[in-house]
Image (cartoon, rainbow, N blue to C red; front, side, top):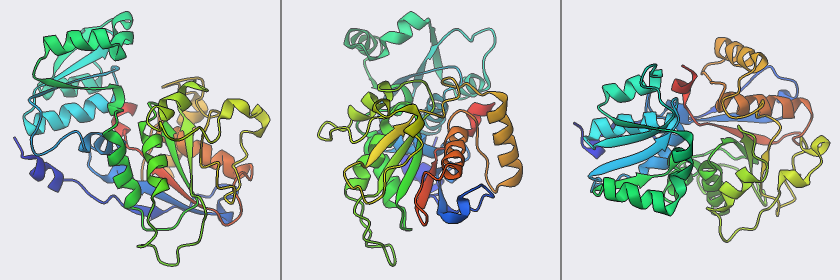
Length: 330
């Protein structure tokens, strides 16, 4: 069992920001960088560490309960850190995998996680106050962390990620599923300090682009907005004709500072058609780091396609956030 400080010492923080030089059409007209949050730790990496880091303090919780599917990166990361810190952990998993546990569930079992399989009807109640009160009675000493780690505390961890960036940029691109990562980026950009950046440009508004990894126009925006109560929606993709969605707002239009592009979900969450699988396979065979098709693969595909369509201004500086989660590709 490790102390929290010893565990933090095993992490690579700040994570690196690396120049990225793919041979993609249009890539030569912009400057690309990757924020390598996948490099934080082999298991506890990406936005999962960022979203959980501020839920874990010196005074550790006595127990933790959380939710996810059978391949959940969130449950995988949370199960690992709970095992390392000696925190009893209960994973409430959608669907019964007891006969055929996924690789993620096999890891949780090895890490002494208590697993409760629930049907889809029960799982849909994961945000209902009555159901959460039942869980509090069942697990009186536990804190309950929402699915995906998406809670208000997560935003500070994402802000920490943005604050680590020491290269100037106009856009930061990230996959979107539960909304907290994009919300944290949006909040961080409001107060982004360029003091540590050499020759920082007077960009009036750096912008965040979310890549929806599931079908959810309007729904994904609402997930982000629940964490941005004082910020009206700047640009909602459902109000833009489909043929116009590839166009990125000009970086001098300061008021439109975030939006979600819904053109790259490939049919829904965890839908990975052969063209996406092929793209990820070729990427992994030629690039200095790996991606997976559920989150990062869709984000990198989106950037490739948007570049080919001329959606970014020439000279734009673009950071792609690698949110980790490679284990989910198993």
